[in-house]
Image 1: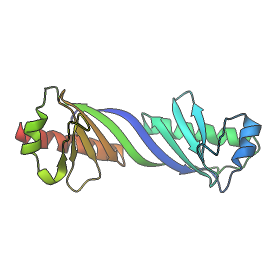
Image 2 (image 1 turned 90 degrees about the vertical axis):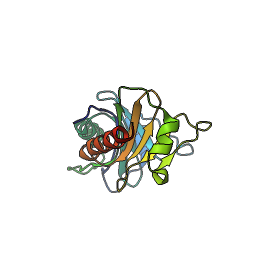
Image 3 (image 1 turned 45 degrees about the horizontal axis):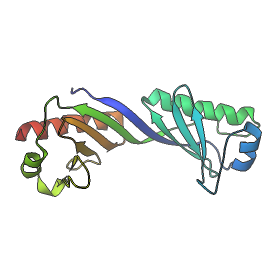
Image 4 (image 1 turned 90 degrees about the horizontal axis):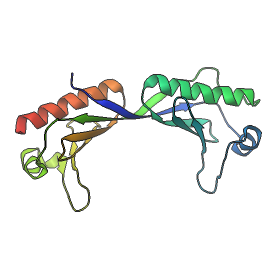
Amino acid sequence: MADYTVVNIVATARLGEFFDLIDISDELDIYYAPEQFPGMSIKITSPKVCVNLFRSGQAVATGAKTVEQVHVAFEQVRSMLEKGGYEPYEKIEPSLSNVVITHNMEQELNLANLTLALPMARTEWEPEQFPGLIFRLQDRPSVCLIFSSGKCVITGSNSLEEAEQAVEILREELLAVL
């Protein structure tokens, strides 16, 4: 298994049927500006995760580094709502929607050579626009940003297992052409 670091997990969950965000903002003293953003951003300090709560009861957590942090953040928001007199669901079932990880190939990479060596249909490189090579894995939702330093960012996975597989596939494809 290749080494990687989880840098962000985005997850969604339904916390209830409907929430009056203006009322919640007043009651729980949470900043809410609907003219700027339709959701209420609730910043959890431990773990450091931001949960955006929407009127529909849907919530999106960003910034988590583990699945456990996702659960803890949603549970803290659920608890805040409950203590404020609101009726969130008792059971919250988060769904991961994006796992972002980094991986280091531990060697300098020549992006011009990689552009020619990797399958052209899955490779984009416009150094004037973006310093990294964009590489799409075949039959996977994951997208890899490959930098000349050897560092790679892999995004678009829907689970930690899928992200881990993406690292393995990326390594295999890169090592095959290096």
